[in-house]
Length: 140
Image (cartoon, rainbow, N blue to C red):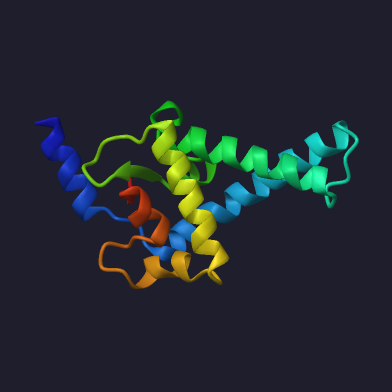
């Protein structure tokens, strides 16, 4: 019975491009602030290679944790906007699946943001990173 409810939620409550965009903006601001503070505490210039490495590491940890079942499938920005990442069957992601989604997000951004913008035009409201990882972003 719970699986049926999850399947209905996945197919009917998919989040669109703009609400996802605002969630990632909130997350990016938060990750940027934390990584700049940590870079400064470690004596690294945030614009240096060391500072960029710290920022990348913080981003990977943040998104992989919060997208996975351990983080409830919601980053802080997604919680503010009542969004959640789930697999296409409605179940939660593992940390490895969240990491695959993160790598897909990097690819989507690297291709001049086409993979991210794809969610605005896709029938299932999936970006390339969602298609790679087999996920949906739904409203909760």
